[in-house]
Amino acid sequence: MPQDMFPLERLDDIKKRPQDFRLLERIPLTVPGMEKHFPLELVPPIEGERIHHAVFLDTETTGLKCGEDKIIELGMVRCTYSFDRKILLSIDSFYDEFEDPKRPIPFEIQSLTHITDEMVAGQSFNEDRVNAMLAGRPLVVAHNASFDRPFFDRRFPVLSDLSWACSIKDIQWDALGSGHGAKLEYLNMSRGWFYEAHRAYVDTLALIWLMHIEPEAFSMLIESALRKSYRVTAVGSPFDIKDQLKEMGYRFNGANHAWSITVGSKEEAEKQIASLQSLYNASEATVDVLTAKTRYKFQR
View 1 (cartoon, helix red, strand yellow):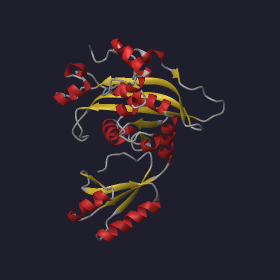
View 2 (cartoon, rainbow, N blue to C red; view 1 turned 135 degrees about the horizontal axis):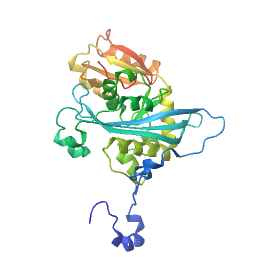
View 3 (cartoon, one colour; view 1 turned 180 degrees about the vertical axis):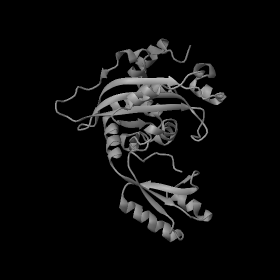
View 4 (cartoon, rainbow, N blue to C red; view 1 turned 90 degrees about the vertical axis):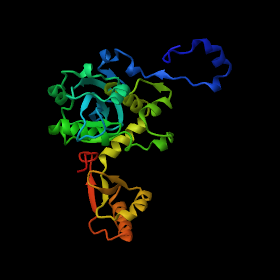
């Protein structure tokens, strides 16, 4: 029996032992042809409330290195949300296109995404449509903005000053009962929903659905985008304290060859500097103030 077919012959077992089974349903937004119903209202607006826009974005690429690899699929879905209630109101429009990277797509990428050289041959992104999707400077939301933003900024440099939010890092999924990971597939599956992952446009719809059924998560996302954060970089740290930096939560950035950590307040940043001073002469350590416009940009 194909994996995508529900085992109807086991209905009697399910009725006898419902506690031993879980039912997964396809995310309605990812049903083929659903885009014909856009614009689609999710929640009725309230007269007088402040209305903002967000664009959910995902990329499929030829690899992991934004300086070398290329975007082969760009998916974007523009939504309206209530700034007052911090909930999604409607899905307004979508964009999904391929672009030819002018090189063979690695086999492992084709296996993961099912995007072939033939599908992208001669294709290119319509920059006018991309600009139209991002008109009015909406908040851009990605599930791992640290990956998608550097690729997008490199491909569309005139749009590199947009505000971004990350639905992995900007949401406290543990507090929402998702303590086993923040992969998009898992977050949806643990709530009873499935979809065919690893295609940009479909992934954006799956993320929108998650934000719709978990309004508290979307509220966290918006609130995080409004706040400043502080990146402390241990410039000049000696090699022999790397294990201590790891234990403190620092991560190594290969681009600038330094360890860094991002914290939520100026006071926390000052504590980090003091901790670094106790480990080495941290006179070169830096603190960068991050906002939604600068957060998740490629660190040079």
